[in-house]
View 1 (spheres, rainbow, N blue to C red):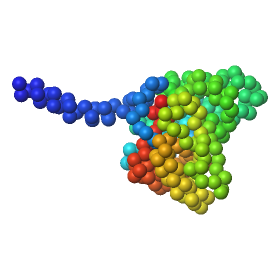
View 2 (spheres, protein in one colour):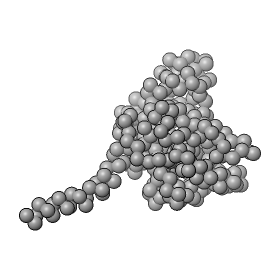
View 3 (tube, rainbow, N blue to C red):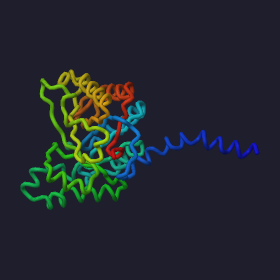
View 4 (tube, rainbow, N blue to C red):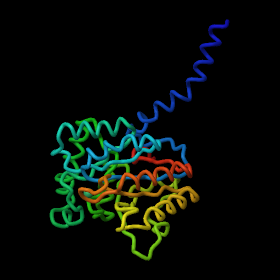
Length: 269
Ligand SMILES: [Zn+2]
């Protein structure tokens, strides 16, 4: 009788660990029926092809138990080592989204060539290649945040969520950018999520941004919302638009401090 009791006890004790270990697997599933067990969150996203630099930050993300989304363009030009890097990021629990085949501005292209040709040139080939590589995207980020509702509607047939963007005027507070916040119970019916850029946070270019970002995170936590951010490279000096690793660490530490979950696009219902 002693033995079966031991087994059932082991199962009971092991169960919470088993479900925690399964979490990354769940995140990767393209489920539209995601169960949501969080009340607020911060959605951090990084665009373009800074794969080597992103991979270098896997330990930093891990340190703060943080998961983010990387939106990749020009997938057809990636070297095998870069695709391996994306798989590494995905295996670490992050999401890989689509950022267009050739990083074309959607509105310009659609105006010139039509919506059908845009899908054929910019969306379908990228999704196909990513899917074949085992990185089927559930989400898309518009290059240069160039979008309109007509294109949104079409893209939401392929993606569960897409990302647009909004800038911030010098006199504005980040917490007052209404479009970057979405109440948790409205995420599933809000296909297009709007982010704001956080590159250069904490540098001379944007000295007050870290305070603003943390304040916006507090705001999301308090109101039961998600807040969406985007950046590009993660490095000290570029190349390209970048967020310094120290600034990223501060943002992730703040999320952990206020118990605000970091969510990937694959986590969103
Ligand atoms: Zn881009």
